[in-house]
Amino acid sequence: MPHPALPVLSLLALVGVGTYAATELRWRSPAYCIERRGQLWNGEAGVLPTAYRPQCPASASYRAEVRRGETRVEQYVTSGWRPDELAAQFKAQGFRELDAELINPGLYEAILEKASGKVYYLATRQGDTTEVTINGAR
Image 1: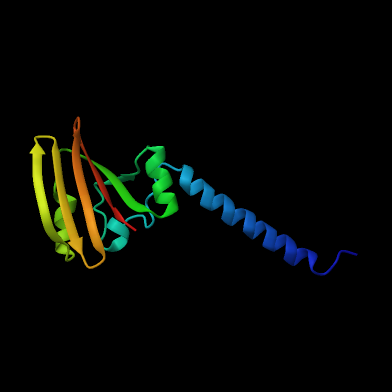
Image 2: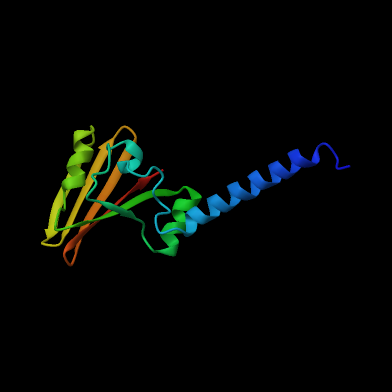
């Protein structure tokens, strides 16, 4: 006859392995930096427009910084050249624009601030798409 605690211990072991696997798989996924899907900057800047597809920088150093909690980054791609569309959404949610500049026809940057901290916003033209990278301190 099996020990009465065996099913409980087995269940706890499965939960532990499942949690570990889910956490590790997040860091290997192409969208490792997106904490709340469908939310822009974890919801602080509202809902992500449906035209934007989430992704994350491929850089191993960026991935390590996010994993250690040193920085936060979100990255999105959309069709066409829409450099400041998501920046406008940040401003609509109470972020103050400290600086914004169209550096050249394919590069736009902005610094936005709210009580929760500064956000660095960079939009780059990638052929017929716009790639927006947003980062800031955790």
